[in-house]
Length: 336
Image 1 (cartoon, rainbow, N blue to C red):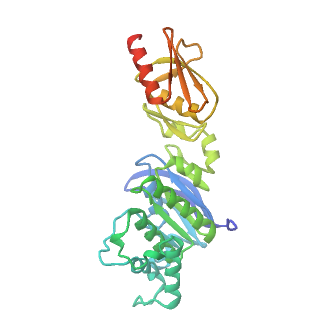
Image 2 (image 1 turned 30 degrees about the horizontal axis):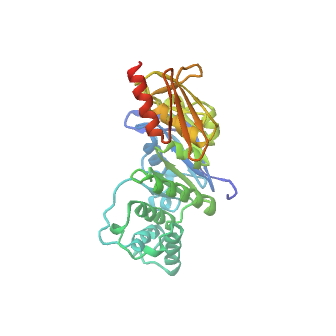
Image 3 (image 1 turned 90 degrees about the vertical axis):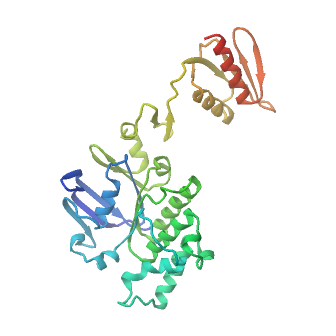
């Protein structure tokens, strides 16, 4: 990771729109070579914060400093040389190739005619290479997959050659593999290029695994820190809560609350991967573990793996969890 130094500072920052104040008196800073992930509930102000920090809307109060200058005093051209922004807005590029679209990122640095010099074209090619799309540089943007389109927009931001990049939910419309790839790519770019990258996402579990730092928007302001400190501070369970799920701070995952049944069962066997998925299946089916229960599942780590279901009436062996669950359900239906 690059040597850490501050690229952007926000002091006493209050954000919102009209007379609606979403957050106030925030003290923030973005450091070179770090990827910061902004998380929070829907409507919590993530997009508003990004747009405010990028200078796209005015703060309600406070100041944002870049390179010892207030962002409010920068012209749009000067600001475009400091901050690149990737928003969720769709773009119309029916006739543009990947290279042509990425070239648009160079406009803040070109003359009035927008003519690209050799160094501009070299930077465009490098930006496309950095997002692993060199082999599709001459393809039309509309021919790409959603994941590839998002990589193109990141390449455009890289071609803009700014020290700071903001991305508002860059993985919102992507499947899980592409989401992971994009977030890992952004972290790699931050570390390798020394840029400060701030992105918002709803993917909390991934953010906990990938982010250098988290900014967590809460009803009591913004909480900042590395992911582990944020988890241990117990902010997450109070923010991401529902009658139907909870945040498990022992493993960093959301767990569904299965409340349709309240049947007791005991499980015995080696503590291994098979036992873990057995317990997951039982929890999903609505069973509660109880060491004193009359019904017992014994896991045998033989080849093939075998489960023995023992109840007060008889015992039976099973070789698939699906069949095991069916037998347990049948027993409890007959003996509630």
